[in-house]
Length: 226
Image 1 (spheres, helix red, strand yellow):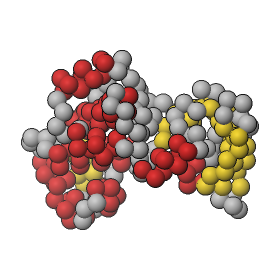
Image 2 (cartoon, one colour):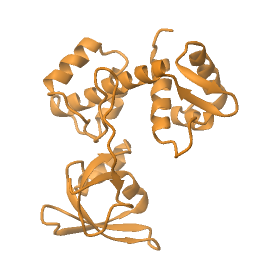
Image 3 (cartoon, one colour):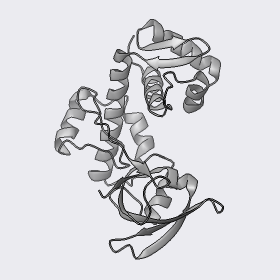
């Protein structure tokens, strides 16, 4: 099967969906896949069956789907192109980090591997994109790192924001306006379950206090110490 943009989008969606599966889960539910792609469940099922016939996924009716090793490598290469393009657009072309996702969604399907390798070299083999998402290597491998969220990290301890897991433009602008972009050192001062909020101190001297909702806090991955 030729890797059309539709095929690549399905493989990428399954790859990202599998990454978020809970412990003990091995299959991505078809409903979740359809929702991620914005298609009807029947449409997703038809395409997944085609991918299964091509050896790119393992499909179990009424249970779900997972990538085969061949499908996983193809998906990782799509992510590699996407994330390197995002970084190139920010660092070289001067686009804002909230503008590049949609552009990369288009370019990831047409840019050549030769150009991607040149971009990788030009950017000095980066490990993450502007949002902190890991960039797969030339062989499709990703260095796995464990991070906490602002809901699980220790209180009154210096942590460094490493990744923002929501690509929504409005959310990224909010993160930028509150100085919570990757690389920023912060401290979680308090969590208020009743108010559904998290208080954070930002800045080199932790001298500015902001309050964000727990939903936003769950989307910020941090490294203790950093």
